Length: 473
Image (cartoon, rainbow, N blue to C red; front, side, top):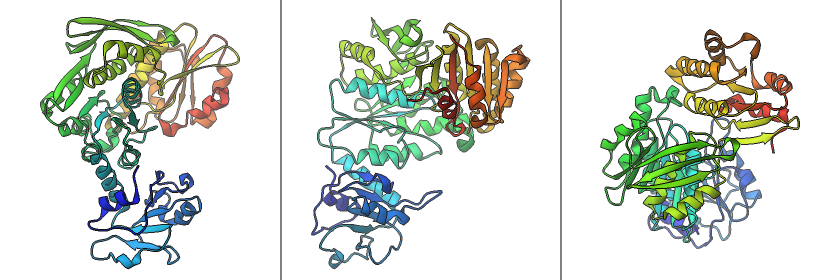
């Protein structure tokens, strides 16, 4: 367990404390503090953690990392070079530890703690499917190993270090999702986590608003495979069906394991069968042998998730029997859930996020189902120069995939215009300014036997529409 002694070893040389403490969790939100926890005061867009030190202590935190002057009432030890005085140590907790930069201190502590463990780390990045791939990979590996994973979408320069500070001696593996917004971010995460296995899902246009272009996104994601150790220790798991990911083969010294459906690869899927809301089955070919598998994951696009999780499991020594059983029993589809309404309609909740690629994949799944198909789609954000093209692509596909189209947000007017130009009936198309305005009318449009897809970027708050349907658990 991470301790005060470990923290001091990570942040400063030749500093020991007269106090001892095992840290019971590291938090950046004072409301999540509990007895024995470490609170890290980070400045944010809307608030500054330094304003909540007392609240964290009131909730039981015994340590706080700070990089600003704090009230004299707080017992403070200055760890900055040239500022440390051993006589600063108080006789008891709670204590503030002053550092140059609390975010860098968090990252430094996490990198130190990761290096104290003999651990296999699987890093996962890509534009679509990171979280589900992380969950499925962790589920498969957990059959044989003790696995740490980042919860939710704690995949950035704050969330990933917080996850690594949860490492215990029992853990043999960590499966870590790595997010990307700007070049250099994944390189930083890799310096902290030191992955031996890197999984790339695909390269889309989400976050192009910040990154600038799809090429820059690919370069940013490739930082993962560039950071891997050379073959045989390092293993890069690459999507051969994505030309941007194929390009990464020349960017790594690690061994490749490739996967795909349409291109020649080490792992390929064929005989794909969709079973509606009961999942998907396929046959995976590998090293001249065929292995039939089934998963409760939804939609044909889930086959890619199955392939990359299988590749990671093979890389870490699982047998095909273990993989097949793990896939069959997995219940980890965070992206897409189904609910039944009291009127008999089936709702597909895919409100986690949205990009052109993931939205079209979800629409393909909707199209494969029976009943009147209703798509409730919100704006797709952060597409940058691909904003118009992305919404046009979705509108083009909607014209033949759905029977009723409900659109939310200013950008979705592009989707509406494209759908109408492709022959979608105007009487079946409804547009609303925002999810609050759309919620009740959308719910009232639904009928018995409908299958309803709800999807949009997080900021569009499409969950408000689900609330109006009374399907949220």
